[in-house]
Image (cartoon, rainbow, N blue to C red; front, top):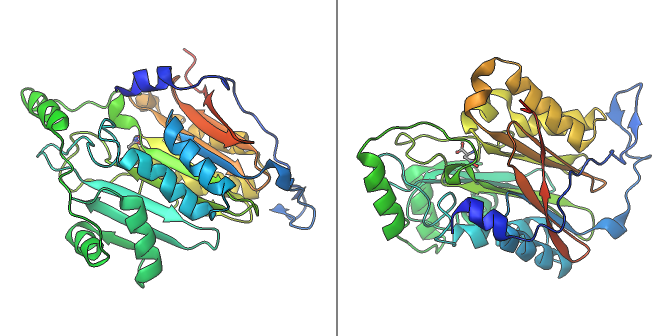
Length: 332
Ligand code: SD4
C-alpha cells in the first residue's frame, strides 16, 4: 500500500496538534533541569511514539511495553514490523534501492543508560535495528558499516535475505529510464520509522531504521543511523527522532539539539520548532525538502514539528494508539 494511502487508512481518531508544556521543572538560574523538582506522573506510562502513520508498529511497541518489556526491546520489536513489511518501500525488506539496485539499510538504537549502537549501509539483513542493538551489546564499538556489519550479522545468527522485491526492482527499472533524482516532499521515499518509548518505570529508549533516500548514490548514508542526528536519548531529559532529508538533519545534529534544548527548559514542541528553524533560516532551499522531528520529554510530554504540511506521528498511551497531525513551518 502506498504511504499516503496507508496514512489515510490508519486511525485518525487522535488528529490534533500535541503541544505539551514540559512538566520537568527547570532551575532558571543554573539553566539546568532540576531532577529534584521534576514532576513525573508515572500513571502516564508506558508510551510509544513513532514517525508517520506506522500504526501497527507503534501498537506492537505499546503492547510490549504494557507487558513490561524494556523500553529498548519494545522499540526494536515495534520497528521490526515495518522492517519486515515488504509493502513499505522506505524501511527494511522491500525498501527502495540505491541507483545501482542495491537495497542498503541504516539503523541505530539508544537505551536509557546512554548506550547506543548503529549499522550503516547494510545489505541482505532485514532487522537492522536488532542488529544495531547487537553491535551495542556484543562489540566494543558503536557503529559497524557495510560488509563488516553484514558478516557480524551472520555470526550473530541473522538470516541472509534478498531485500529487493519484485515490486521495488520494477520501480527501480522504471526509474532508470530517466534516472532523475529529485527529492520530493512527503512521498514514499521519505518515510523512515523513528520510535521513542517510555517503559512502566519511566525509562526511555529509541530506534530509528530506514532504507534511506530512494535511488541514493551507492554508499550514501543519511541521518538515521547517526546518533545525535536521526535519534538521541538522554534518560534524564528526553529523546528525539528525525525523518526526512538526512543531509540537512546531520548538518544541524537535529535530535541531539532537541534534547539539549529540552535540557535548557524548552518543551518538546518548542525544541522541535527551534530545530526546524535552524534549518529554514539558512535560506530558501527548505522549499524542496521535508524534515520532521518528534520528541518526548521525561514527563511524557510530546512535541513534533516539520517544514511542510503532511507529517503525522503515532502515539500509544493508555492502551490507545492514535495518529496525530504535526504542526508545520511553511504556511505559504
Ligand atoms: C535519510 N532520513 O536517509 C532518511 C530518509 C527518511 O523519512 O527519512 N525518510 O536521509
